[in-house]
Image 1: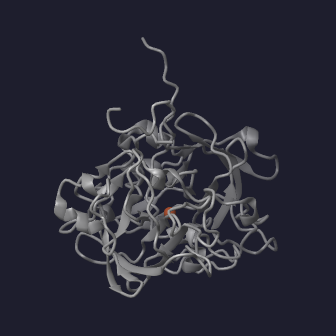
Image 2: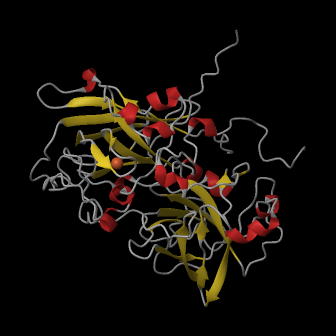
Image 3: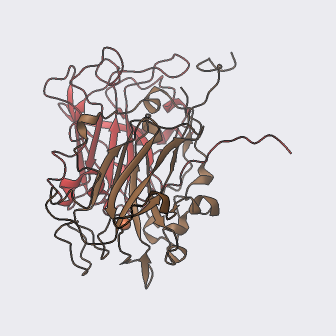
Length: 199
Length: 238
Ligand SMILES: [Fe+2]
């Protein structure tokens, strides 16, 4: 016999299902009015410091079809690499945003500021990135991934450096398509499968 | 502070053929497992100013207190804890559910059970200093869904919990003690560990019910914990 560890197990995840919007983005589901506005509607206020950018993309299933019921959350620091809640954080950056794939086209849109760099636990700097969390019908546990940017120096990023199959690094890098505009598609499985994280 | 790495055996696998939609929506390749960084260890916080007085009362929040929803009145309550068994205070808990007939108020739900004009179907609250939360709602109905020939969802409420770190984010579903449809449900069956599935079933809690008013069901939630050691944030091998 041994001493008991007295730890609890994390509650099992279950799919968000097709109606995740009712709970998380009620206006999107047709339930405007219960709350003054949906939570996480905007990643930024009117006058954030730094470059305002817009990231567009789709979440694609194994057949290449865009999910029209996905819900995504993002979390990031301000342009100086300070997270909301930390001293000196830009009050115009909420850091957190919630957005849905369009019910017809499956396209999502995130308007935010280009994040600053933040440290890795060992003190090295990570390249600028935005954390994503993706839920939908058919996804049994929310998927973690990150958006990096193709116009930043990603060469020394500790996380990207740990991706064994080097051609898969590209799946985490948004492509600049115009001034302040980026494209970032998420492939759930199959050719070009996005690198998902367990962190 | 580093998060305890996720015990994936506590969760459903991404691919479970019994739940058909998971077949094309599950990553095939292994997840990249790494220790958490500040991006994962921080997260949004929400203040009490966010929460309206009826936000955790689904019986009344759709009609703004005018007219109660149809159905069996219940109190859903419990605590949010972490793996170290410590309460998670001031964290946002959101729920959504079908009405008493098993119909969701959603643009894409076309089940012919009627909408309840007095029921919206979502609510939210913050846990208190001890991690405690409560909702007043109605017990949702079971409903059919397209999967195999004749699949029905057991009575369930969807729940989203934030915690204090973005990588603690969790969405789950809670079921009701005694519902025979739980054992038949392919989505409940994605949870392979029997104890973990039982932990999703809320027991009837007569002590918390109110005579002549509502029954109560208790549902505790456990989020990922943080590693409590003095040996943090060192370079490899140092
Ligand atoms: Fe449901």
